[in-house]
Each structure stands twice: as structure tokens, then as C-alpha cells.
Image (tube, rainbow, N blue to C red; front, side):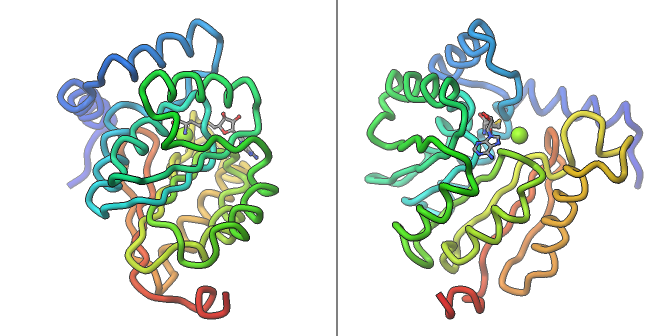
Length: 228
Ligand code: SAH
Ligand code: MG
């Protein structure tokens, strides 16, 4: 059964009204981010809640995020980690990183979250070296869309069997998804979606919440883990 655009919009508003609740720290972060001129591109509360659910369901302790911004999604992920858990989150904009650190500390998550400054493609190999293969329980990518396939390539060996990999904006951001078939971000996101769908070590689907979430679980060991 197909749904009209109006029905989709209504569903989005309904989900937000029922599941979009957030606490004082998340609300304050959002308010101050707007005041300080950070871009308004964080995930929504209902997406944050889904991330937290996935982290909690897997009992994750070691998580990685690519694209921190003001720490909104990081707050959801970090809170859901098992006791003693840790989130490493990568951000190349120093202003965003500093803002995130400040707000995560205010929410009592300063110890749980390690904000790494730098370009994702530079920092990821360092983290890979540091953590070693099959070391991560949960990964969320949300930085430069044109780099999505590279993020997955770099992170794949770090994903242990049973871990969860999530990509935001799996249905694009803004209007390019529909209006610009050959937009570089669309091409890269589409490549990642199809790569994971065809990867026999992962079971995956795409949830059309907000701008789309690719959700994949590593079900098999895979060659890259075996090869290190
Ligand atoms: N996950 C955040 C939103 C991230 S927005 C949330 O939902 O709260 C994307 C962020 O990725 C921006 O802060 C941007 O500065 C950062 N970013 C973009 N390209 C990057 C790159 N190549 N390396 C590191 N960070 C990058
Ligand atoms: Mg996003």
C-alpha cells in the first residue's frame, strides 16, 4: 500500500509528538546550540531514542561516532552504554567539539565521552590502530556524506560479530535525494546503502525515520576481521 506525502508528513509529526520527548540536558544543549549559531542538523529526539535503544539492546560498552556537532546524538548514545562504557566521537570543527565537551560534562558524561578533534579520514586509522580488530559494539556515522563509503571501509574491521552500525541521512539530507540524482552525497550514501545490503556479514535495513537511518548488525566474522 502506498502512502501519500501528506501521510508521511503526518506520521513524522505524530512520531515526534509521542516519542520526541527529551530531558533538560538535551533541551538545553539544543537551545544553546541555536543561540551560539551551530548548524541545526542534529538528529531528532526520536532518532536519538532509537540510537539509545540499539545501544541498550546490544548491551554495548564501546561505541564510536563520526560527526559530533554539539554532542546531541553523543548524549543519547553515551547514556545508553552499559556501566563502564565509552564513546569516542570524532569532530573536525574545534568550535563544535568544544561545545560538545562542555555540554556532555554538564550532563555528567565527561568521563564517558572522548571527543577527538580532526578529520574523520585521518582520525579513524589512528583509532583502528589503538583499538584493534573487532573492538567496537556500536558505530554511528553522521559526518561528511561523500565519505560514507570510506568510513565504513575503515570501521568494518573494528566491528565485532553482533555489533551494530548505523548511518544517519541514509535517505539524504535536504532536497538533493530527490532533485539531484547525481549529487556526490547521494551517490556516496547510495553506495554505502547498497554495499551493506550486499555484504553477507551484515544484516541490514533502512528505517525511514526523519532523514533515514541505515541500521546494520554484523552477523558474520568476515574476511577483513580474519585478515586483521
Ligand atoms: N551527530 C550529530 C550531528 C553531526 S552534523 C548529532 O546528531 O547531534 C555533522 C558534523 O560532522 C559537523 O559537526 C561537522 O563539522 C562534522 N564533520 C563534517 N565532516 C567531517 C570530517 N570529514 N571529519 C570530522 N568531522 C566532520
Ligand atoms: Mg545527520
